[in-house]
Length: 183
Image (cartoon, rainbow, N blue to C red; front, side):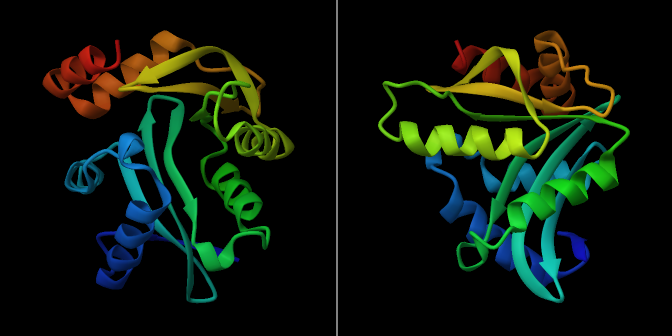
């Protein structure tokens, strides 16, 4: 059974999380680590190391707003990829947070993308795990994302709800900067 260990409860968790975070996500898609950590200390965000029988297998960073859980970052450790951990983690997230509408974003699936096949596989992976594509995209910096959702009730997350979630998470000042950069 997978275990979610909070970053604030074990210093070894943080070492593993930080290394995977920096290596798994391109700089253009990473929020400064210190902001993630600081926000996770407050209510409304959680930063977890994911363990299977005391072996670090991945990280999960999520933001909660009303009945929405935003999976901000999810990564599986390189040595654990291709072993079904991604699906197991999503299943564990659904079990732990099933009362929420779960939303996440993936890089836009566009035929013009240099890694088009990889993006198609990523979308297919989430669809295989019960997620569906929402009818809007989000632009953050120079990156355009397709939005995906999992909901036991089958209802999605509106774009306005997503922006309210981000404003609540970031605070008014950071949110204004975020929206300005994302034009």
